[in-house]
Image (cartoon, rainbow over all chains, first blue to last red; front, side, top):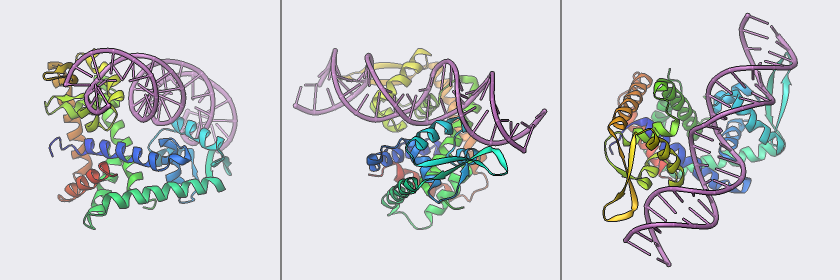
Length: 137
Length: 137
DNA sequence: TATTGTTATACTCTATAACTATA
DNA sequence: TATAGTTATAGAGTATAACAATA
């Protein structure tokens, strides 16, 4: 395959997986960013808005809109962090945990389907590449 | 690192590289989709709207807006395909070639910076993973 | 003064459905 | 009838800059 830019292939893979995920999770009525945020919160760790934004890959100002939606649906709570009342800690509610679990399951299923036929070690290399790209200056 | 979903890492890498690219190419005043489209057209091959949409990862209806902008800036032309006048062939203009070349150069530079320290074979494995994810059903 | 988050603003990105032209 | 693309619509995603509250 020519046009071999890894970055272009990255865009394609991202578009395809996001769309696939949204379809697999259509019953939840979540937008792409909602899915991304819930997927990152799924491990149960509470995060500040900034931390979540970094994990998701967007600015705090962008997160605000997403969090407004998730809060409105009762999937997360926002609370001032004890000790530093500037920071806002985001945490899943009980319903949020359920939704996030479904998101993670859909992601895991998708990965399994897509990568079943690839050699075992390949995935680790891919992670290294993705991490390096995510941190580029 | 926990939260090890490849899909989540994919999103992070995509956000980070897009933003980095947009900054590196700020002088050209291009939107993310413009950059993506030009990067795909950079090899000089003319493509129909549908083909380009597939390469970029979006629907034809989305491409229309991007192409309107690129055409308005004189970077591409649209013409009916001889033999099937329903199809629209997109091609870079002379200015478009210049812009696309800069886009590809910025992408290549970014990849070099990010991946310089990784073992040689890693990249091929990553491509295989990205391709598999892009084609998942 | 610096930091965290939200608001305000202005575009871009996207999909779906309806439409036009061509096959 | 089927296909390629555009238009219309509506909403989601994004950044920047200005702002408020807290440190």
